[in-house]
Length: 280
Ligand SMILES: NC(=O)c1ccc[n+]([C@@H]2O[C@H](COP(=O)([O-])OP(=O)(O)OC[C@H]3O[C@@H](n4cnc5c(N)ncnc54)[C@H](O)[C@@H]3O)[C@@H](O)[C@H]2O)c1
Image (cartoon, rainbow, N blue to C red; front, side, top):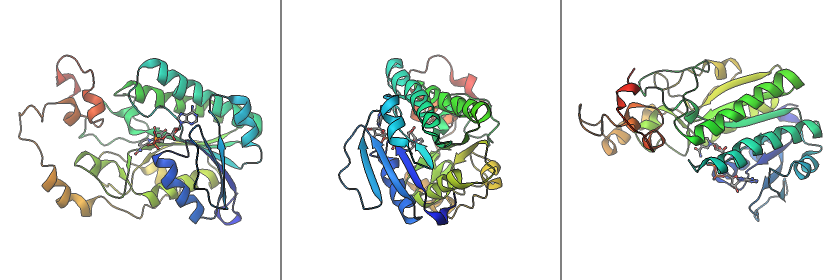
């Protein structure tokens, strides 16, 4: 499939924040969409079909994926909720989705991972896709599971899988930390579209960031696929630093896990002991 021949793409979690913005991006690129969510969607265009379904219902998801060219898998636990919720939504949900896709013959999946899979790396480090996983939260562990099953599906069952470690998708970087992991809506649309059309993709992990050159991530794996971000975080730097200045050296804020690492508030949550172990 190419962008030009207007494929049929399913999106799980389509009623959420990312799903809502991505729908518009993919519609503008000419795709037709099947929108899967357990929340009702009432604003469908004539290029979209909404389906009320829980992604853990593998048989139902299999039926609804029939005839699709690819699936963009967004539905998961999106907070640092207790383990049972992570397991149900992010682990069992991803197993169900990938197995349903395989059963339906939909052999291309774009998986919404998160930078929280590497959230306990020092903020000052520049990571590429080979970085050791250091999830900062139960949420990050759940997202890492999806990357693992994606790799297994790609190599064992001949699927084509792009895992995008999304930073923060928004109209602009909202604070100092997000200068290093922000992605604009149109850049996310471009990356997802690459994932569903790239002819030789097997399994790749890329960072879902706009052009944040010199900051948190070395996204050469995405550039190798043809990604050319249209937006840069640098023009927002002065405005962001005025609202969110660098904390004084040695201050409590400067030594907090949220400041030392890429994960922000997730890194602080339930943290015990000395933050020194997080230093480079
Ligand atoms: N928002 C961001 O900047 C960001 C950053 C990194 C990663 N992500 C990832 O992108 C994806 C979407 O995030 P979001 O911000 O839109 O989250 P969200 O919470 O706004 O949306 C998630 C959607 O998934 C649906 N959902 C959850 N469990 C479901 C189930 N069992 N069956 C059917 N639908 C279910 C929810 O109803 C909701 O509409 C997630 O996988 C998240 O980890 C988002």
